[in-house]
Picture 1 (cartoon, rainbow, N blue to C red):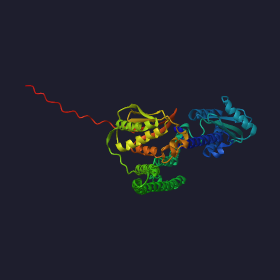
Picture 2: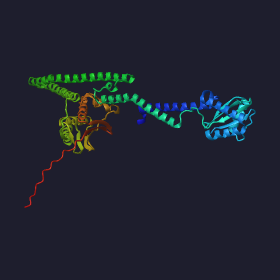
Picture 3: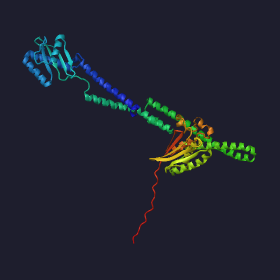
Length: 466
């Protein structure tokens, strides 16, 4: 699933962690403000303003009387939305319209003789303290502010913007951490498909972290593997070329030996000739495989009728299968046009069909079908043999690979036929795969179909009306 990738895991983890930290910080600020017993001590300007406010209110009452104080309190409530009240030392309110919240704060101050500061859930600050007037009388001053001038964390819009910013930063960080992994994945896939020259270090730029170290280690491994595979191919090619000359001389020597050998020794010479032909065929297959893997073979842009090539191979293979009490038959043959080499395609199809003949049971037929889907020609070859264990299906196209007792040397194969077919089909831009079906093995070949060339119509004759 897309959201199970490493990128999304890192992104969501970082984003959720940042959002949780932002939320926790705001909650801590809010609770610290509510539970602070002496907020004005830490709020500087607000504490001083409240003290001056209290002294001013007491001075107004003490010098100008209750009526002036009431006007002062009403103006404060109207203009600033701040409710203020004065209480005598015993807690008796000077104004009857005092709210219950303010009265409760005054009662608490009268009981403890200490100033009180409370914050409601709506964020309103109720503050009060004992004030001594210039006349020497003690009063309890209580004010209930409309909005406290204190930081209570970010506003809702600020929290949303902070979380969005954290998401952007988390996205960029996750992209920075996972982009080398994606590049490494692409390079590994290309390397697995046979491109041994691909490297990851140029893609990582100037990175000097652990991911860059991993990329350099991969490049070192790729160089070692490429060197081993290259030396193996050179060894196969050199051995194959070197064996051709001794085999040619052996054939000449056999013909000379036949002329000077009695009938009793002819059986031994026939056996030598048979083994020589097998070795010669093996050398030919090795050379063909080496040319395909080295890129020496080039696919010419030749338009071919694939159904004709398949029919020719089926006719020849059926002729050879009859003495073994086997048969090769065509179930369906659709016209398909492909571009490539007729010789190479014939060799690839022939190797697949011959492999099917080798392992199909006596008295059964190898079934061949050619159809097309959209822009792909699909060739299927089905035998009625023992099949292949599921765990080994992916390996049967490797050179010299054998599967258990069913593909021992006594069967006549050396494990190169399907390898040659695999390289040939891929050289033409196609695919080949094998799968087990009830009572046999099914090999499916896909080749890109080329559009048929336009038919040239002769120009229409001009008709002259006389």
